[in-house]
Image 1: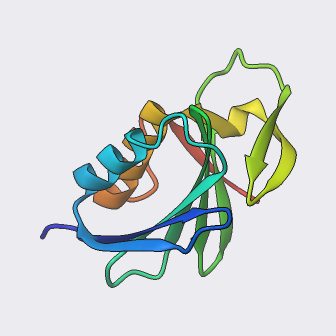
Image 2 (image 1 turned 30 degrees about the vertical axis):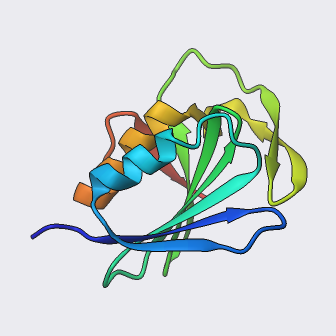
Image 3 (image 1 turned 120 degrees about the vertical axis):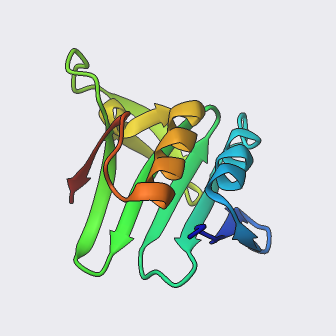
Length: 131
């Protein structure tokens, strides 16, 4: 069975741009094409599912949040040497300080999204942390 996905692209001050019927690989490619974009949110929803993956993009970094019926999870990068530092990051027009362990490059984010669409929460790049 092939997973089909709806993707909604949101930019501050612009109407949302939804696209349906995308494959996991197409979703990953769309994320990579957003490299360098500021304050963009992408909402990924598998067709027929009740989970939503939200990817906030600011420059070449991404923050991933997974909304499920049992709560919210944040993706944490697998890097045991990483100190608990924060970094400025804009989400929804708001400048925030986010722990760097929750920020990943877009290439990693694309891999995580594709893995999630094809097989669930298990990832080679890190893990999902309950919030």
